[in-house]
Image (cartoon, rainbow, N blue to C red; front, side, top):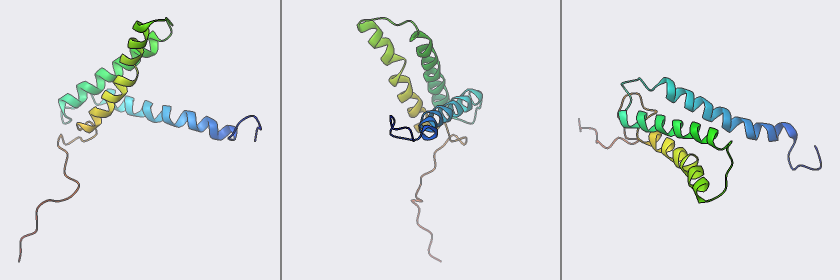
Length: 112
């Protein structure tokens, strides 16, 4: 273990790589599933809009500027679309049936 770091090098690399790979997988699934009519329309459109904003934000951040406008652009293309992407999953993006079934059955069985 390198004394200048607090974790072994392979572990630190995995800590950075795994979330990026997981997000890339979710983004790829979202892009490929855009035309899937069995998923809720609002969730599909919200997720694609969020991914487009994230992509624009990645490109815009190469042009580093100062001031309140850049802070607003950074917020509108960073945390805001990530939150929208999460909300899209809450709206049923991951559920191909288009409806979210309750986790607990609310109906009681009929007595025999």
